[in-house]
Image (tube, one colour):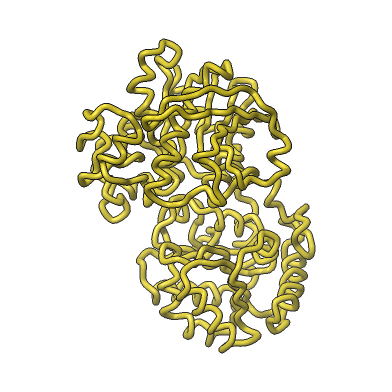
Amino acid sequence: MKNILFVASECLPFVKTGGLADVVGSLPKTLDKEYYDCRVILPLYSFMPQKWKDMLTYHSHFYMDFNWNSYYVGIMECEYEGVHYYFIDNQDYFTCDRPYDGMPYDIGRFAFFDKAALSILPSIGYRPDLIHCHDWQTGLIPVYLNSSFQENEFYRGIKTVMTIHNLKFQGIWDVRTLKDIVGLPGYYFTPDKLEYNRDGNMLKGGMVYADAITTVSNTYAEEIKMPYYGEGLDGLMRARSNSLRGIVNGLDYEEWNPAIDKNIYANYDVKSVIEGKAKNKEALQKELGLTVDPDVMLIGIVSRLTDQKGFDLIAYVMDEMCQDAVQFVILGTGEERYENMFRHFAWKYNGKVSAQIYYNEALAHKIYAASDAFLMPSQFEPCGLSQLMSLRYGCVPIVRETGGLKDTVEPYNEYEGTGTGFSFTNYNAHEMMNTVRYAEKIFYDTKPAWNDIVTRGMEKDFSWKNSALQYQEMYDWLIG
């Protein structure tokens, strides 16, 4: 039995802000329990819903030296869906209304969390063979393991994996403050270790000292070795390329299943997708005030409304695209200019564009089930889950070829009769629009070919099973 410990700042169902929570919530329960004892350590945030707090039982507590003080470290625990979870309790750091408050507060919060996560291991009687760290919030764990924790034989030989979910966020603050907070010797703050442009960088520290680095798609693993995507760390990525691999995230196929989904208007599977989507489209058009038309192409967008997701491209040609025989439904929040842009087009093209500027999980399911196509023209996308959800629901993705989008959406080839979606290469508004119009042409002129694309997409398997096997292979390679 191999002991694998996950340490992360968020995890479904306890707390979620993004795809990180989906991974940490899904991967541990998918690992083969015959060979792996996988456990998870999380912060005990005060804002966590009461129903999850009520599940927790007290394990123990102690006091830990940190940032020139002695801090309380409480340990709460529970078992959920076959996985053992530990929650680190400290009112100074985890009394908050959201997991991230910005710098420099988050530096102290997660540096404390990293040191506490290692410190509780003897108390809970669990020595991991490998610690799987997620994003910059856990970047100090490999560094601490290399430092003072080496004095204790319990910690010697523990391997670490650092997974990058989004390289844009790195945990950067000035060296003097960071050094003061984390309590590491000065020689860790040099350009070959934690120093980055004269600041301290927690993610960089994790990547320097981890035994292996993963990211959430093969293409993104290659992209971040280049300056355009590397966020200033492309040199380190190239230096550690032998230890870097990409493993595409999976999708929870129980939660996202049109055959049993309670959120959608009518259930369907791959055999009944044509009739099922027609029923869902009609019901969604009625609910959102769109013109009820079973034959019109409905394009869905469910996203954070930010530059990263390609909304500057959409803004440039939205008026033009609205001249076509299509409808748009948009769900999400984000930058004010994009929120207002979609409100404007919903007013200008009443009955043709629906802008839902908020987020609602049930409505997201309905949009995937009702839409014919899903538009996702991201500037960069480490993995992306929306395209996996759309494939699962027979909603044809239209994406830019970057990161996980390139790895999971096979572009349609009308001559060979292959492909699960439509894609374009350059970050260019008219190239995107031309791809949308090509998709429209197939939808309207060769409906059997379109239906085949839908079927092929639904038959793809992007569940966690395949991803879990790749992680298990890496764990075995590291632990030996």
